[in-house]
Length: 115
Image (cartoon, rainbow, N blue to C red; front, side, top):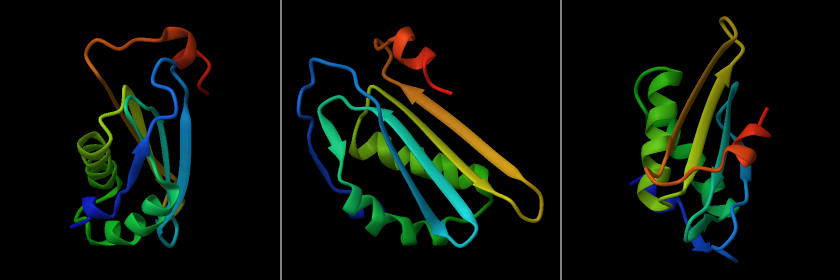
């Protein structure tokens, strides 16, 4: 299973909100950006690197890819907030962004700094 490749570690300090950003290329020409605010767990970058090739089997376009990654991260990490962006330049520039958050979490100052 794809999700099993995602490995995690305990958050160094769950009292504070902080932003983690990871980028990768699951298949040639497709870029993936993951930004999240951890709760109890952080994603191990090596685990994400092992996970990326498994995304080549996700059927559908960028929308399906972004939703699949969001579902996998929500299942394995349960972050306070998460955003997944997937993009390609061919045949036309195409970008999809999707986000989710825990129902009771809000940090408008942190999210307001994101560009």
